[in-house]
Length: 139
Image (cartoon, rainbow, N blue to C red; front, side, top):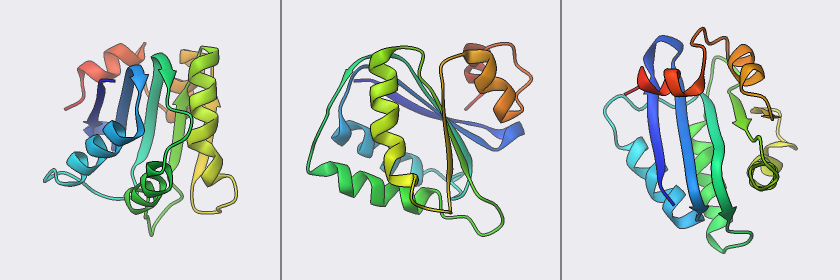
């Protein structure tokens, strides 16, 4: 599963894109690498594009460790981070539900699972006409 993580500096937005088979261990590796970047900051809002996911790992011993890592990434003192999942397919929606479930009981992170790209862009306050264009402007 390719996973890419980029930063859209104007919106202080982390952009994550999954494609193919989504494997938890590979996702963890990508987030650990992101956390080592010099421009890493905790508490940023996040766009998770799952539109190109073909299937995903349903259960893994790494899942709890992955959510602990994500808690560290979302640790924010000045605002409640928002995770927006772009999930236009059944497979993507299934993965988004698994990914969002741990945050449902916490008051520290807000999540949204959306099927339409325009809704994702509007919720995040992004002016680019597409996620593709947003990612082109991300580093």
